[in-house]
Length: 358
Ligand SMILES: Cc1ncc(C[n+]2csc(CCOP(=O)(O)OP(=O)(O)O)c2C)c(N)n1
Image (cartoon, rainbow, N blue to C red; front, side):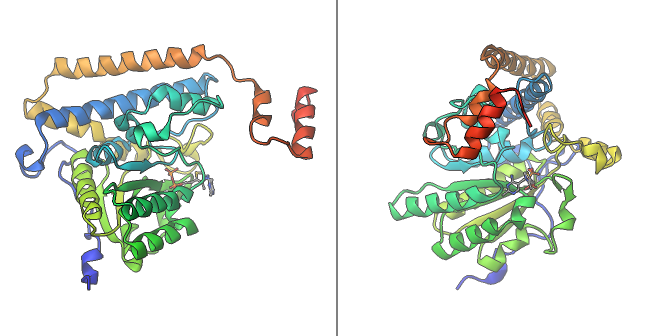
């Protein structure tokens, strides 16, 4: 029988790269090449640049809404880098770092947020399931997919991504229980960004940490500094390999911070002081890897400028594509859901057409 204490998470999140860019141990110990470190840095810069552009597009009326991942790039990029090509990601709506690493065209995501009804990527092309807007429902899909893969002799692992608030949902508990009982190769990744909209994590958590919730179901808990891309990679790789080799499901809690409002529909100044945001700015995930790359002589200032310029060019091209799509007719919200729309919907559509938008 498994020693139950082996399922407990460590008392503190694992950190390899501190806020000043100092690495515990040497680059050689990471199992990553200098080229990998540059690749992770580039993916974080791309994610932030694209995310910033999407925020601006929403403010200009081009997108319905946007959920920024600023501040969470390291947790997402580090763990996505630890995934095998055939592993599947089941994201929620804030996982732009995951989709960027997996190669999902960012323009396709934006068309979805713009409301273009055919604006979506093909999940099987990237092994990335559709974004889940309902909180935690996709965790069960990830468990089912992992279990089915295992039954059919496939050694893929699924990764399901949610926020801290999502761990208060019934679906979270059902997913962990099924995963452990079936020994499904699934890794649950909770980005604890400190808030579920305006509700701080401590208002919905009595467990010592989110990762401690795993042991009650027989799921191994991990804690990692989610602003440290190298630790996120290492912990992600350990949990994924353990699941792949039959060791069972895992629950990773990545400690991080949401630097922007919950979505563009939120005003975060109403529930958190600017000093708190500034405190986390100093723990920026990109700045610390950048410092390490400069200190180690892996990259130099002109390289950083080139990476930033490339990300800007990519972002501008996608922006042009999304704007060129033109406005989405509002009447489309009434279409494509029902073959025979219910009477209420028909009434609303008629009222809308008549100019009554109540
Ligand atoms: C089932 C369900 N209930 C409620 C909502 C409304 N809602 C949208 S985001 C959110 C908070 C989620 O917080 P968290 O899980 O911490 O993720 P974060 O947005 O911080 O990444 C809620 C309650 C929803 N989308 N789905």
